[in-house]
Amino acid sequence: MASFIPNLEPRPDTSPEFKRKKRRKTYENPGPCYPTQGNQRIKRWRTLREQHIYSSKLIEALCRSRRTSSSAAAKEVHETADRVLAISDKGTTRWSRAILTSRLHAGAKLRKHKKAKVTANTRLQKPQINGEKRKLTVVERKLKVLRRLVPGCRKLSFSNLIEETTDYIAALEMQVRAMTAITEHLASALGGGAQPPANRLGSNVNS
Amino acid sequence: MSSRRSRSRQSDVSRITDHQITDLISKLQQLIPELRGRRSDEVSASKVLQETCNYIRSLHREVDDLSDRLSQLLASTDTDSAQAAIIRSLLM
Image (cartoon, rainbow over all chains, first blue to last red; front, side, top):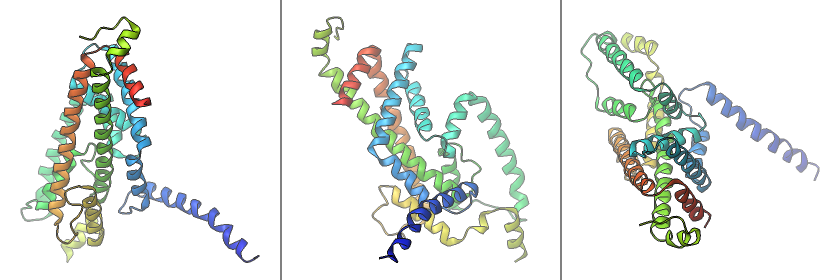
């Protein structure tokens, strides 16, 4: 009996601490280490709770933006949705930070400058790395396309890029699910159920 | 030999082992619905990356379509009734 107790006590104390230390290490060294922390983040995107939080934040942001500007262009809605998605990530991943900073800096000018710099660097670097001509392999070409698709990952290493991609895909899937639910609710509420509340209120007439 | 050593000093890519690369790519493969069921030795790395890019592009397009529909729905009605309708439906 006495031998069980000291075995039980240190384990619940050390295991969460050990996990916390592991998490701290992975944040400090962005190298090729990818423990369960990435899986936990992806599982978070898949929970219903996260989807509900995102939906309510998105609705709030959309109503706020509609009050300020009367037009509700599709691009504006898309940008709002992306911004709320980046906010709900709370800055843990690179793509979310890239989305938020690109909105702040009015991204078009910065992106043009960055593109010019990147192409100049690649033109200079290509003959320097090897003495011979270097053609991009198939995998490298695909990685280049992937880097363009995921925001904020243009200069990332291979393992970090894959990690960002997995998180980005999970987040995009949640965005699609949440927006589908909102559109369906809105369509059904406005199409079918709009008439009884209008009768109750007496003021709104939807033709 | 000497070229390999100089390359490892210049870039970090060669420090990642092949095992880690295949691990990461199989992890990516599990996320993509088209490639989920297949074994990892059947699908090449370039195919996984290609399908990843296609999947991300299709997700972007879906979000585009959804935001289009959402903007049309929001434009056809005023803000307060839309908000009330959504909240009501979410609560139910």
